Image (cartoon, rainbow, N blue to C red):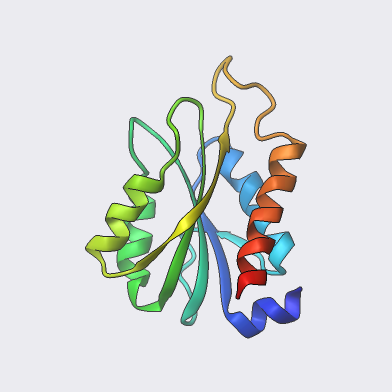
Length: 144
């Protein structure tokens, strides 16, 4: 799978405060053969497939995600959103809005699961969530 990842120019970036989204990012990165990195690490080259992970904080995505998209827009082919949240459905709509503002393509496919927060959803993302995230990523790459 790593050969395909290098050939397709795939990257995984994420923002997390609690570690939930980082767990998904690592599962996705492992599945497609690239290292998952925080959004503080800019893209080095044009990336056809960017798996971008975020969480919902105070009903929105963190400013670090906004900066990442703005600063890397010329290097992003298409964003594939993945996210965790205790209450919200996903970060898809917020990330889609940011992508449109910066002229970046956004895939319709996304992966979302619950994330633990305080006493809610303890243990999430769990092993099944991580397997599902990996399968999501493999499916995107397989479609080419």
